[in-house]
Image (tube, rainbow, N blue to C red; front, side, top):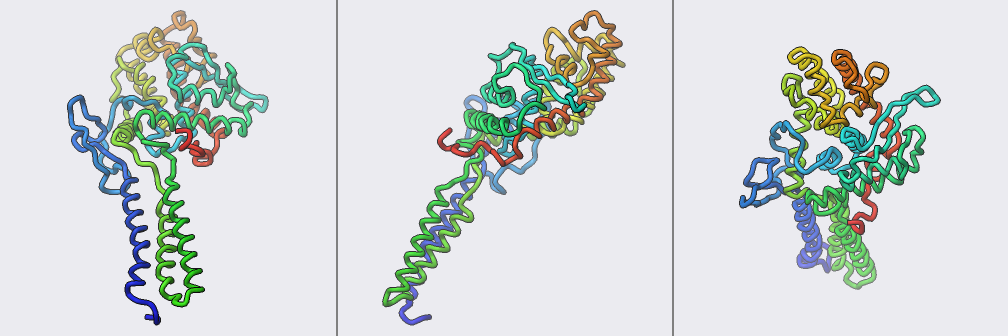
Length: 397
């Protein structure tokens, strides 16, 4: 041991390092998601039931078994479910929102051929159902339309959409916070510990300068090292994700359960009399979860099965149910080039067998059409993480 350096001096230098280690440990623990302890994962406590929560024990988010869920998540939308799974708003969430709005008759989606002979997509407001839109749906739609009633995707400039996309992302992030799934912006990073880390490094540097000029310079060296290493530790390990609340964990588990169902669904699982509802529910979430081709094939197979079991007229009525779900055939008419075979605006005048055959042909191409629409939107919005809507998020929230 150098002359003038005591055990007490070394212990004093260890104190800030230990304090930094304890702080990081507490911080990392608090970055774990919460989960309800007295109900099945994915459920929320009922009225009068215990709402006790705890942090997940392994990892930072629930990684236990997830029960397959046969219906859409509660109190959610395709964009919100897609976001709560990983805490990031993806371009496919906008695509899923557009498909959902089309099924609700709020917009129409029409495939067109541009001047270069390539497929393009026209998005048009119908002027109905505006009061049924959630705030994040309205902002997401405005990110593409920018106040216009109709727009062709190919005519949009990426730079313009990127600027508006940030507002759309913030709207989705705000929605998951408003629902109590997160306490603050999901993409927020704790800058406090980083600030403290920089402060400790400066103090360490100051102690080093004192050590250089002091008569007993060895006495100050452990303190400078302790502050400096502690500061580096806070900066290196002190930034982390925003944890989900217990409600957020339940929403995520529900989304994962529904995603598992959509990924593994078979036509035989679908009840013929519920096809219209299944189409409306499954397609938008399938887009958000990236399994649209599989779900489109399953729905088409279910429709074929219904034709065999019930006949063309009954199967067509089950699938379209124009009085209750006009958005379904609007979507099919727009996403798939069916106009030449089926005029859905005059559906009552069309032979059920011909109409059903056209609809089946539409389902055969629906997966590709949805993928093409997603690619068109993906070419416009920034890559994941480039503009995550987090700049200034503490002020926004």
